Length: 99
Image (cartoon, rainbow, N blue to C red; front, side, top):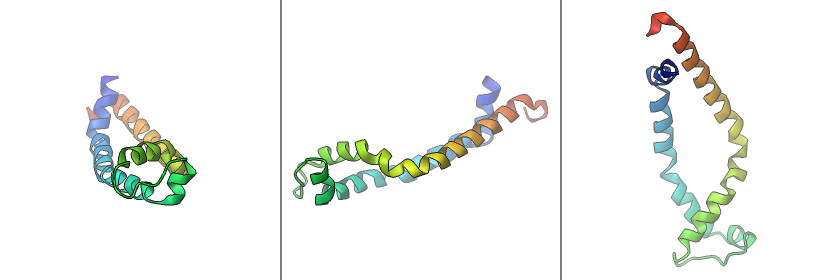
């Protein structure tokens, strides 16, 4: 099991995922704020649009609740990448010449 986890480290899977999170996370609050300012988003979820910025927390919570609906099409791609990383780490763990 330790060799498998070292395989993730050696294949730089950890750095790749951290970089993806780093570059995608700053956009999340902006997208939530934009969604909170659109009337179709807030009215569709039963919330009054907040243009003065007082309900940004509500917009963020609502955005997080509905985000999987919009990112559903990306789930197979993310799953495939994750599976590939797991197979690479397994291959590293069983290959004695790479340790």
